Image 1 (cartoon, rainbow, N blue to C red):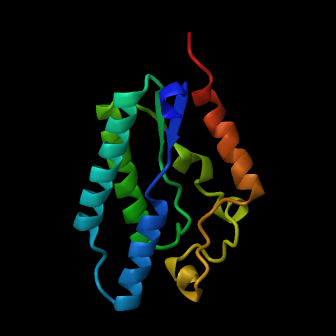
Image 2 (cartoon, rainbow, N blue to C red; image 1 turned 60 degrees about the vertical axis):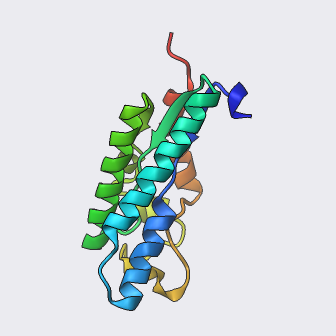
Amino acid sequence: MIRHAAVVSIWIGGIDLANAALLSLRNQQPLPAKQFAANYKRNLRGILAQIKKGSHARIICCTQYNPFPNSPLSVEGIDGLNRLTIEIAQCYGANIAPAHTWFEGKQADLIYGYRKGKIEDALSGFLPIHPNDRGHRVIAAGLAPYLIPRN
């Protein structure tokens, strides 16, 4: 299917990062940032290389918004993930959609199940990181300009 696509969007890493942070909290261990970064780089590069190999589609890589803006660990982790995303996307000539800017300061209104904006909010078993209906509208409006071909 990708071979025939005009545009491909990639938005990965957020759930993996959230799960790594939660595991770190539960085990009272530091976040394995180097291992996470190495795996993320390998995966994103592999995806981008595969798309480039089999398609002429424009590629859009989305940055991650921070569902836990009141946790320093989350701020650091999301910033690092976004830096990696931007760096790797640029190497493959992909466009970057700054989703983190669309949600910044509005997480409580845009994320389903948002509580206090702390990683600890997810320790109950519910991971409040996905957009609600309003959040999906913000994403659609933010992505729309990237989907329209530029002449």
